[in-house]
Image 1 (tube, rainbow, N blue to C red):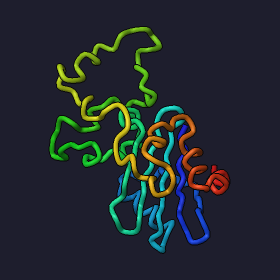
Image 2 (image 1 turned 180 degrees about the vertical axis):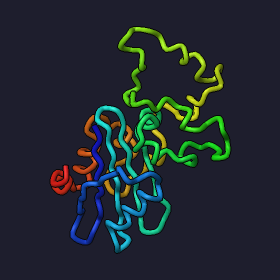
Image 3 (image 1 turned 60 degrees about the vertical axis):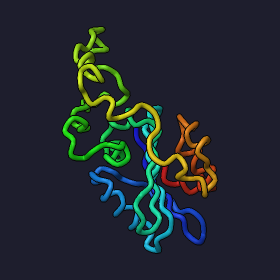
Length: 187
């Protein structure tokens, strides 16, 4: 289950709005959505969370390039919403390279990393071909956090704290920002 929200910082504090990501296909689409939420070029945070799997924070400060943090790139890569955040630049790869395309990953809806054959108890023979020996793209998307871990430093959530968040990260971030009440209105 996913939850996504926009938190826009205003003179009066944080304002939250529920974010529907069904029509968002690229980071540019997400930037447009965020910038519409704050016409005064204030800070806007997009918080995305897949329950018990991964979370992402995208920060927009006016017209500056967005800053992104994803708690687990490999888990996010199996999600259509996560794919929006996992840009070539964020993953440190060449956008012209064919062997690191996210389309090569298994995006069959097994978003929690489970194997399609887990129910039958069979081993997935294709797993042997992924990775360094098989030349697959598994290494293109690392397990663990990627992006800017200091994305919220000036807002009271340090790198160590951000990296330690897990199950209810969006709520914990909102609490640290003093925005938990406004977030709950859209949850």
